[in-house]
Structures are given as structure tokens and as C-alpha cells.
Amino acid sequence: MVHSLSPEAFNTAIKRLGRELIPQIGKKVHATVTGAVYEGIVKRTPVLTGLARGSWEITLGAPAEASERDVFGGSVTGEPLTGIEYATRRGFVQKLEALPLGSSIAYITSNLDYIIRLEQGTSPKSPPNAMVQGTIINVLDGLKVDVSKIR
Image (cartoon, rainbow, N blue to C red; front, side):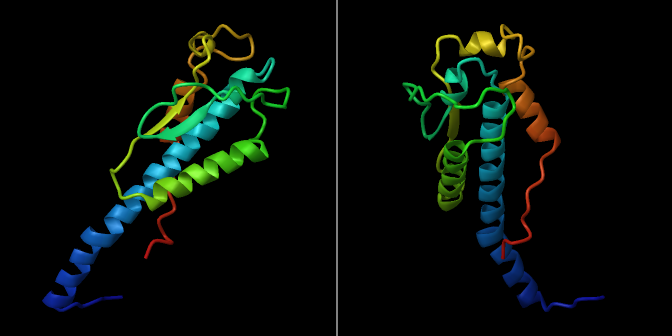
């Protein structure tokens, strides 16, 4: 199929692409990647008491200064997100998609005093670099963003 556009129609389409579609795609990518990283880190956090898994927070503009110290109610590392964790992820993704592209930085933090040691592999339930580094590698390797619904 051959499409022919007048120079004016082509120019209009290119302007729309730059003005509307590229920022929408950028926001979608930012929100999708941030949500996937949050979910991966939470799911990969070793579970003994559930405190570490419940301590992850996702914020805009600045890292969380204090942990809410929720306790994950499951007993196994890798369990799917709970309703509360999923609602946190979904709400944050929606916030990111509503903001102008590039207007804020997303942070995923845990302020537990032993969270770095867990990332370094002190838990027998998790190898070194599994929570954060492993999640980022997996998300980037499998990055798929559905931009087909952006019009």
C-alpha cells in the first residue's frame, strides 16, 4: 500500500508527532519502566519477617526519607504483588503518565538499616545483587512498552 501526502499534510503530521506523540510515548515508557522496576524489586526482596519487602516506597521528586515499615503478609520470596502493593504501583504509574514528560524523577527506596546488606547477598533466600541490580537488568532486557494505544 502506498500512501501519498501533500507536503503540507506531511509537515502537519511531523509537527503533531513532535508535539503530541513523542511526549506521550516518553511518559508511557517512563511509567512502564518505573512500575516494572518497583514490582521486580518488591518481588525479589527476601522474605523472613516481611519487613524488608514492606519497606519499599515509590516517590516523585525526592527519595522517601523514612520508611512506612509495612509488613508483607506472605511467606515466600517472589510471591505476586499484594493488593496494596499493586495499588501502589498502579497509582504511581498513573501519576507519572499524567505529568509532563521530564518534570519529575521517580525514586524507589527502602530506608531499612539492613537493606543494603540484603542486596549484597546476606540472605540465604537471595543471591547478591538480586533485588535492585537484578531487577534493573531483567527489566531492561525485557523492555516492552505498548504504545499502540497512543493516538
